[in-house]
Image (spheres, one colour):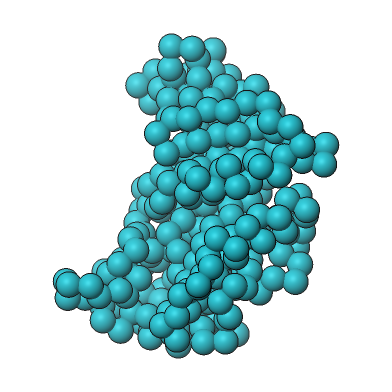
Length: 291
């Protein structure tokens, strides 16, 4: 479903490069790109992944985008932190794709396209009572409650369109959420034995996820309505802030992307993990062994 983009030259104000020829935000060059990439939201989590590498060949620190490149069991792997939110994911994936599929010197799209394998390792809160703290969940579909895809032409299946429309109606939103399935190839490879879920991606951590601290909520029944939603057995299982952006841009750009989630909260039971770091660390080890 990847779209074929124009072969016209890309202006320097559109794809910004640093003086050394690296892409603007990631500060990386094409040589730094491996076929398999692990992405994490928290910059400190990069070190938790790379500590398992057999060797570390490269490090780059730029804003929230920290990159380590090394090898694990003889396979070259890049791990990069993205920060939180689909706005950061747009920057991250657009610049990764530029490294893979743009001739940066000529500023032209390459004739032969390269498809990357990207595995997100993130934390998430469960939307269903029976999803235990400490479990690992692989995201099959993602529902985007953010508006990133209002600015892109995203191909969608009939099922995805239907779910998006139903979620809009159920919540009373002024826009239609976008719904995208992740990579079935990576889902089957990485997700064996994990909970198969469908992830809701929110444009914030508090009110957009139904948390009330001091300000009143415009959608006070958000969590309950998402908890009850069901389309022919498709239940919504967990909240987070990036997966739908990954899946949507991955489809448009032609990359294989999957999201693996460490469940550290259960919103229905109002419980939070006593040791979230342990849950994340076990997921990191599991993903590395399956790459």
